[in-house]
Length: 299
Image (cartoon, rainbow, N blue to C red; front, side, top):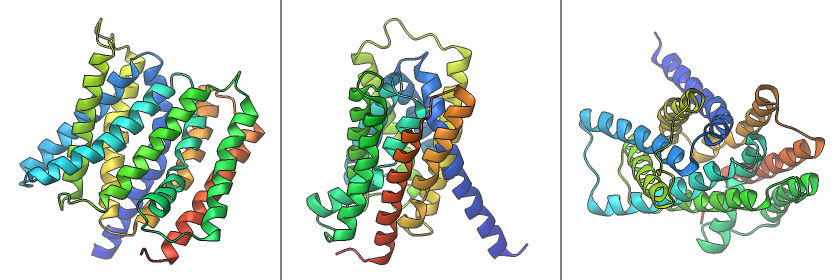
């Protein structure tokens, strides 16, 4: 077989994983947390997935990180797994998977704001300001659409705040000293993030009494561990090692579309015209930002 064809085929499979599998995880989270404590569910997902991937990488001979790398990985895991997914799992008890996915699609928007005003690694430009404004208008439209009496405002704000934490962790990932092996980096971040989430779960009393795992919630959790973390997240870091961040970030266009459609057809979630308009505004904003970032160098 031609090696080039084999490599291209793997790239296609990896993109399919982050496009489709990550898009389906929003509904799987919703199913799991309606029957199972949210922090415990998130912690179990990432601790099991991270530990399995870490053990696999060690068996392959991958070295352990240095103390400085462990510290940096811990910082990033707090941002990208504890803050972000802790908020998402908790909020999806009250917010539909489709709306959650639309709010989560603002990650590139919050990332560019942090890069411009906090980390100062991007120039401020009128086009970026317009793109950010469009994105925030899309999120605001969700609230106008549903109103405070129908939309759980605090959970939605928690999802958005968690997205800011993810963006901060993503920016720090490019600035801090981390292991050269991206799968090892992903494994330890998930493992540490999962461990902290389990501690928080115990602190919040979610383990007293110990949760009873129903078949439905158990299958959703297993899906998140295997397909959402081990397969999709590993595909994500594999792609990051072979092409630009901008190309890989294109999953932000597709995930909300899959999540909204799956929530509507498979779970009977309500999707209104304004919800769809909100999604289009957010995705349009993300498109403008990612296109700009692929054209202009960082400073």
